[in-house]
Image 1 (cartoon, rainbow, N blue to C red):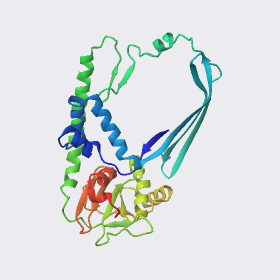
Image 2: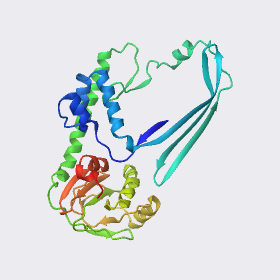
Image 3: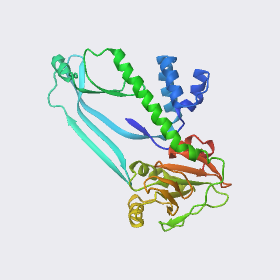
Image 4: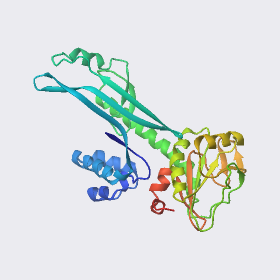
Length: 316
């Protein structure tokens, strides 16, 4: 049985177990990764993995079940299953896709020479390699004569590019982050759903900036619907530039249970407006948490807003 984690969780670099083990604080995941690679022992890395899953065991749900049956002894002391059943599921929008496979072994031998099979499966010169052995994965053409130092050089380059991309993302998010602690702009626009979007005084509200053309945005909707059932005030704010009827169709298809607003204030292009109803959002999905006093409390992805802000972990 394998499990999948869903819902709110604590990043490994924020765990108390991590701080106790390293005897220091970590400001980001990158800092923790650097410590794990340079200072932590193999036992410490394994222990942190265990601590992480023990901490989040309430968020784990059965995902894949494999059952082996009909064991037979194919050679003295060698027993193998002849039948395998495998069942798994995947969430797709408002539906769940279930997969079931059935494998039956008709013949088994214990004296087969596997060397030719292993040799045939090894990469050949020129094959594309996805190397996940390092902190940052790299792609390159396989060359049996390629020195390990050359691969490390590719990893270093990939890490630099990742940091540059992160700096670009930070630059895009900075205008939003600068709003934290300040009064939230008033929402303006056209209500798309049956219920009217409104910020209720004395109650926190979560704005979810999304779009019908944004596939990652749709992954947030099941959790947002669950939060509505727990008395959260959620408002979906759709990016400008999409026909209202198309948004209404998406609301129905995705079974969105919270009100949705099509903002009227747009500057710049429709796909990358400078401001959406007063918020400088340029990445989707994006969440803005507004506190009970009407001030911006936190911004980021839904997962970041729910995990990096301690107040948001409680029932609203």
